[in-house]
Image (cartoon, rainbow over the protein chains, first blue to last red):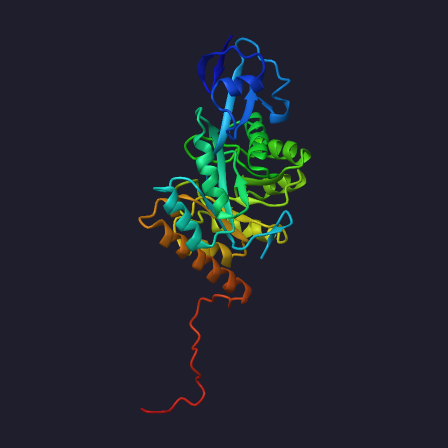
Length: 65
Length: 256
């Protein structure tokens, strides 16, 4: 299905958020996720089904002031 | 030292981690400043995980981290960012920024109070980036904030304490609330003044990171903060308009 990942269009085979994170190459990376502007805790990624057109944000620690 | 949400920090310097020329310079600036808190943020991650390298640098600092919601212009964005930051950094501390204007980066006080109320109810320890407005401060305290972070000047300007009267009034209005001057500082003397005025800490980034020698500037801020803290505790003299001789007048010789 086609979804948006961090503002870019992506074609994925995965059905769940957890699988998509793996498929997209984040593996064990320290990331937090939001789908359609709603935070999805890591513990709930396995059970979170994705739908075509979903907007996925994958964020990580960064420098800040 | 003042406690923030029950945590005493080792130094009144909360130092940002952005804009340094390299991770090595960042680490050196933190080492020489003895900063008590490291501020951080979250941003989009490319696959492969560049964020883990930065996170390792921060972890090695061994300091409490204060994640921010920098760049958020709405309550929803700020609240969602706070949730993601809490999971990533494993801390309930959040420097809450709800920006109201793109050029001045002035806080949106209405969104700020609303977001603070939501986050406090969700057990966050909210450090709100606000102005020196005492009414807004009161609303933030009513919402459950136990710390206030009034700006010195707009973020990144280095203008120092733009409204000393307003800040002094805010300090006097809420004498027991831990307060951090957040943003706008450019020089150590401005940080010393903030401490002399009775503020409990300062939060800064650009002034150190963009200095020609960030580590030296970081140490300069640390020394200034200590000087200001000592001066405040020493009960400084009241200024006066007319001169008053410090050398005794009594016993002055008559030589003409």
